Image 1: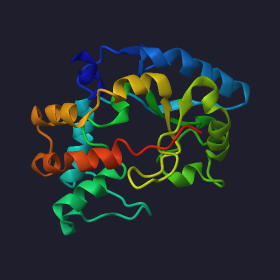
Image 2 (image 1 turned 180 degrees about the horizontal axis):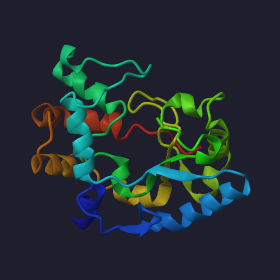
Image 3 (image 1 turned 180 degrees about the vertical axis):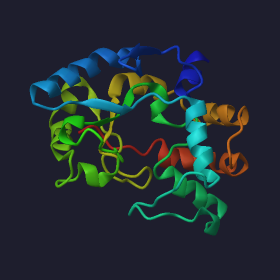
Image 4 (image 1 turned 135 degrees about the vertical axis):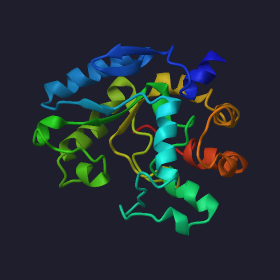
Length: 224
């Protein structure tokens, strides 16, 4: 049961502290090596967002579901959730934000990365595809990740849009440590987490959980 709790963001027993972040113990050494490799090529590889607990993911989800935080579509246009049927509201949010209990950020093996050396000190990171496009500030980082991630056992599970989560070229995953916990992040363990919490829209989520799980949890890009 401990691994199921870790996989759904309800236990931190798999994590260690490093430079203000919490990482999966099994991913730390490889990430440090990846960072050193990038540094040798003139890239300051940094974590913008790493581990996220169930409660943190629930706060993000609830704020979006309740209209406190904006929800955007794939063209970065604001979505009016009140105009959508219940199931479409879920799809609109899950394009960019995982269900609590279903996020890969629970694993401590997945990180949103950037290179602060390519932008001004007061730059406000957005984590949108334009920043990583050929004319964006992180274009060099994007190309470097494509060339070198695999060398240290990482890949980008959302490199392209495959019908589930939108393309997230900034999201990298440590393959071996993520796979261990992904096997414990199942519809049953996610449902258990949801049933024991106050998550907005829970009554709409649970009847469709198998469908949502297939589309947004299992639909991943293959390692590059």
